Length: 327
Image (cartoon, rainbow, N blue to C red; front, side, top):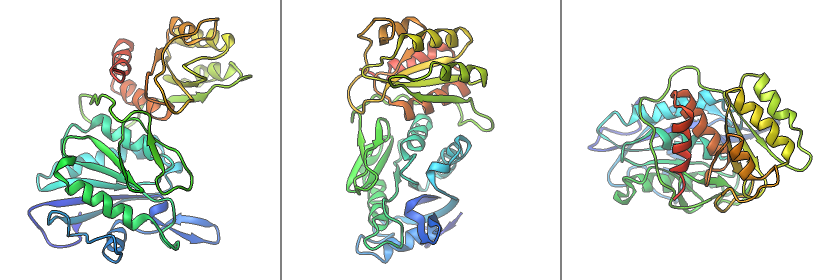
């Protein structure tokens, strides 16, 4: 890792992973092109601010990868989390900024929040417009992320997402717009922050599938997950965790085959509680052996289940984790 300026008493590490914030327009569409140092330089060249103006901290840039976040693998996401952890082993580091595509930022940022117990700030940011677009929002977002890291009030908050003038906790965040510069909202701003014990996994991780449920959905999707040796399954059900009785029956078989099944909702806001019966309600799904996710929606519930299964946690411990994401 090479500092972008001289060594100082404190350093902010900026890790770039690609995404729209680094993209330039080509005949084949916008593709990631800029590295971390160029993103840092874009802040210095813009009216948004200076890279060394926040609490006197220098910025050290790390080019980790250049990919669209929609093309990230789970292995890539764990690589990002390990890079953050590695950066925080240096006591001179004030905090970390990660530039990331917005498509799956909610997953990677939450995965980082699952493992990082350090109270120093970790801020994810990105952009809605490519770097070569008129009015590109990337430089302002990077400047805001750097300022958030340098703010003493950011310590102890866990991982946050800073974009479009908003700073939101990673736990519960989700993308709400394909175009609005303020691209994210939260299912709840004060979710309990439970950090998983042990080191960040290295190597193969548990496979967890995720399906959105709807009228007419084939119960065979559940059987297919079993047949393809998934370790876990996350279902984004209708309403407060409801579906068709045929799906419930297939879920019960999946649980008998050893799958851990988590049920959440495809509805953006509100707590998911087991209220309805009738064969396909959340009461029935819970009786079939599923675990209810009160607040975490499917993308983040899936990352949590991957992390928990990879760490060897049993069903009781997994149920306790999701219960602790309620109040």
